[in-house]
Image 1 (cartoon, rainbow, N blue to C red):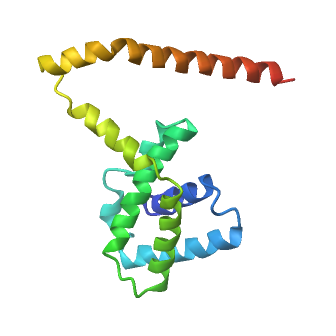
Image 2: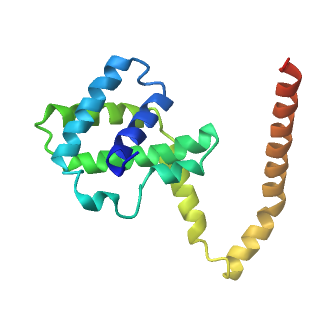
Length: 165
């Protein structure tokens, strides 16, 4: 797959993943719109291949459905940001923007979760007050972690019992 087609691939994965485009006719129209958008952005330029893909490699590490919703919501937001500066008088730009906006509306918590992660990375763990607060919350955090771990084990065990392989 060439770097030019990565944007189509990622956009298609996003839209199919969220069940928005099971209809191949709609997906074909979207592919046509994206091809026109590629022409608008001159995405066949030789520098597009430099450095490899920007989104698809990130998706590899996000395996669980809820995890993927977080990263995909960020990717959708980035596409919308790109399209904000595009020529909205063009039908293909409007169509892609509308479809991405619809998808973004189905992902209300991704941005909040990403912000929470960013806030955690900004904590100054060398700050004594932060350390005291963290130690004060340690039992609650461990309790949540154990609940989550136990819940996952229970789900795995139940699914293995149901499986008549």
